[in-house]
Length: 219
Ligand code: GLN
Image (cartoon, rainbow, N blue to C red; front, side, top):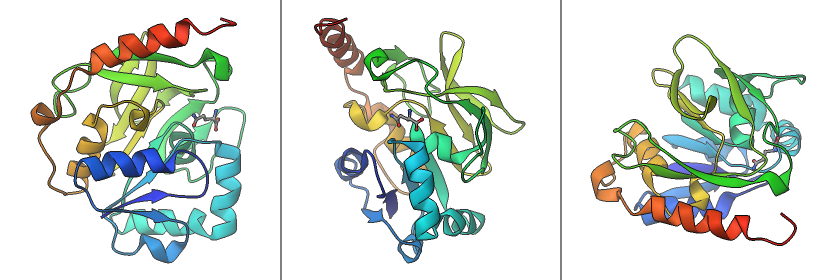
């Protein structure tokens, strides 16, 4: 079973991708809902707001404690900020993953964009589409943290394989690709279709959505 932190942000889309993979999933709002989970997804949203809600619910101490007992963690966008050991110019939140992030490094909501990138073959044999919405940049990775992909020279995904943690600054739940959800589920010891079986024409989706985004009035 994989949990999706349900305090604020993009919860439903993550649940939808897990459902599409046949992975049992549930929402997590309280510490006791972490019991029995193999992994937890911390979704995108607003990290300052999420940080306050983590504190109010007691999940700010319960998540690190569950992680120490083996709970795998994946943060997307604001979720990656929550996991980071260091946030430029601010105090960190859970401070579990040895990366530094720079918030809103690509600009405002209007500077949202899609891209396509090669990823390690255990995630997908084909390039995956990436959706960036007020994304942070990973500006440092510590020892033991593997860079999974960069867009230009900007690190966009990193993993601590032995620590069971993954950070993606983009939103895999907002593209049709199931590659990252499949990889995280495998990291959690769950059985899901292979990366080859999950391969779709994701690059075409990315080109099309970028064309739509670029064609919006006001750009
Ligand atoms: N800009 C947001 C933050 O700093 C993250 C945006 C997102 O999750 N899409 O918290």
